Length: 216
Image (cartoon, rainbow, N blue to C red):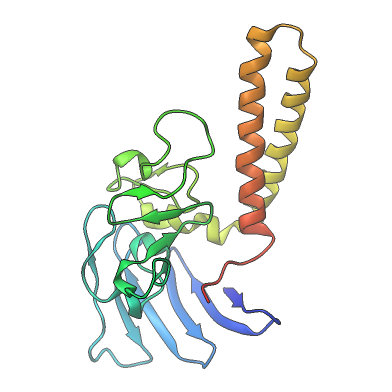
């Protein structure tokens, strides 16, 4: 179970996870149940105990809605958080919050660069959204059960936080090694790699382990 809080410590919602999001309860006690496809994307939600007029959702390959109203549901494509107000008052023209970066499902691209300084730094999951997910906005994850992978970070967040700190430490060690190395041919690529390692894992730790992002 996960809990979202607002400023002042007030509980904004409670979320129950299995392999994917099972249910969500808002601050007023209203509960919704979720049904997902193979990618973990929400395809059906039922409020309370009644399936009457239950909203359904369909997406294109990169997550743009083809049916359903985005403004009614905060968790949609791959089960990730949809920020309906990220681009103004048109609630169906929002963005996905993938922790490290915002993702624009209408063009299949992130709005900011990947921290790693290699290759094309904007595409979502290497342009392979059918077989890969990116719950952290940092690196695609290939899997035969993407719905499970998309929630591994949420379910095992403490272990991920420890790993982030370990990799930051490794990056600092490698950077120090590069700085004392007299051979430029070896020192420069090592320094670049070490800096990227530190930046990615420090950003991931700050984003995911020190506070819970909530849409206000």
